[in-house]
Length: 552
Image (cartoon, rainbow, N blue to C red):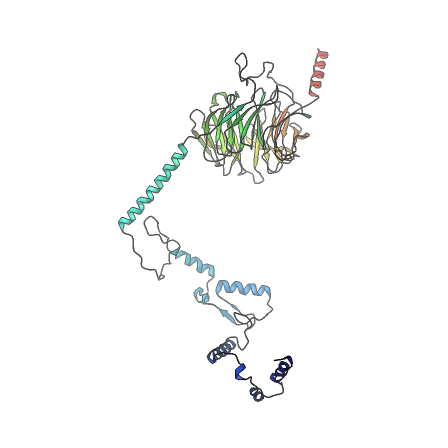
């Protein structure tokens, strides 16, 4: 059929609007061209459309679910009616103004939906006991309701006894496994590498012995001015650095590379010994008073007691939680006892001789961050992530006093003044707070040190041996010095390119400070330990000596 023929057929099939209904009925397509549809389907479709028109009030269906009509309603009134319908089961139609109710309205009987839910909850039956076989759980019904429950085989008394016996055996086995884990000795595969020439001299003295020309005594300290040496050897960030007790001729460093290194300070300034045994990053270190042994805490949940000279493990301790701080009792007669503040929200007191926990100090609600001994080592102070400070008497697991102010932040590091009358805490709001430790332990509102940035980092701090200066690290790698008496910043020195995480003032040299840092400037990140000293302190000492001679 060509195009002309199609146009002509279309004109003939068009209906003139002026024609009557009878004329339209006469215009019909031939039967041969009609679609193959059964008459029953057409009748069913026509009846369904008529029913839809009746349900919608004579309006045609414009949505799959019915008829949608656009209506302008005040939002406040709509919300009011919506809440009324949700709580009481009825509301007003915004178009007709008639009341519309649901099946819920009959159940509420004028009460609120919350009251009905509360009453229904009280009628809920108990879930039952799983051991006795009466467990229903979330399928428990309500009192007074006829629950349709399928008939199931009920347990006999013999079966209930068997289930009870199995549950008792399971609990007993769990307790046995827990006891086995706790009593199981901690094994640490340790090794060490000695880099020195001789471990003993011709007289049989150990390399740990200090030089004979080193003499102890009080001295005036000065602020360092320049870097004199950098130790490089760790492959990751250095977390802590500890100076050898009394003489300070060695430095011990713990790093995220799982290794602990002993560095020489006086002679060749090289690494003397490397201790390997931890399987995770080293968190904290603590020397014994004589320096012949030290403790190391690691993220592998172990605390290890090392022999400093031979690099061997004396004993290992663990409570299956990460230790964050460790501290020997400073008393010479109690060097066999040490404290561990851990992730377990408590402080554990260990005995080195037996390896057992002899006491637990439980009061913190978060990880214990610091441990500081005060009052001639009779008391100690602990701080934690719960923003609280607790004062304990050593050997008595009862809190003597606690400080918990609403404006307090987490104290991440702490140090005691050399006169043991004050304690400073590194607060996470970029401040150093001072606490009086005299007759009453309290915060000193008059003294406060600011200027540095430490938020988010557990930056350590310390004092000069004469107590004249307070020193702290910084997130930008700077080293800050404050005058203790004047409460003001004396100087800030650029010590590192990354976070200066730890600072230690040398106990013998008046103007040397050791710092540990996270250094990320090189691809294989080497972290440095630096010692700083001043240029002018020798000149100052000479001038003082000349003045004294003139006076004489």
